[in-house]
Length: 235
Ligand SMILES: Nc1ncnc2c1ncn2[C@@H]1O[C@H](COP(=O)(O)OP(=O)(O)O)[C@@H](O)[C@H]1O
Ligand SMILES: [Mg+2]
Image 1 (cartoon, helix red, strand yellow):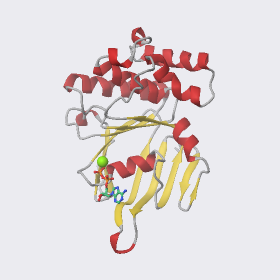
Image 2 (tube, protein in one colour):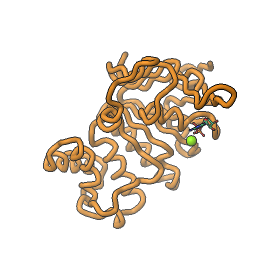
Image 3 (cartoon, protein in one colour):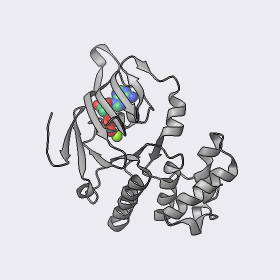
């Protein structure tokens, strides 16, 4: 029950006094290991703020967050090393793959564990395993510029998975892709979530993929309500 990622009553206020912006007004969310959920909402509703809080890129003003049985924020308290948390426990996928142009595919995926102190041999072995799972192992020695857009996005997914993070945050991962490729990426993310028991949160306004989510969080004016999973609730 305490597994996956959970936030309770998360509040984020930018600034203070008359100019304060109440970006998140008490958000609750839980994503289980192996589950993929969508997060949608109009521009300015707080999606990016929520994703940054979940990814420990910015700190919430108050509220609680846990990953697995580890408490990350508990109101004024936070874990001491947010940097290590971001590196080891959270994978990020963006709209663009942001591969490093002068490293081959394998080293793009292996770089993070290498920086974290894993031996090069072990890090590359992990990279190749994931590239195989994602059906791009035949491109392992290619440079990013030699790949198609879809191949680059699969390499970016492998990079997000390589530290076996319990949580992956994806910000518009299918925006540049056509319908068929977008659905293929969502299927891959579902397969990877199940295979590695990762909790995956996808921010999107891609109409092509929204119907594929079993559970969807809507955010509006800094508050979420949930759809799917059998019952629909509003808050
Ligand atoms: N760094 C910031 N400083 C002040 N206000 C911000 C900052 N970032 C976002 N906001 C405000 O917080 C609200 C939510 O923004 P954001 O999380 O970017 O929404 P979305 O990603 O859904 O468009 C908006 O009113 C936005 O102007
Ligand atoms: Mg945004």
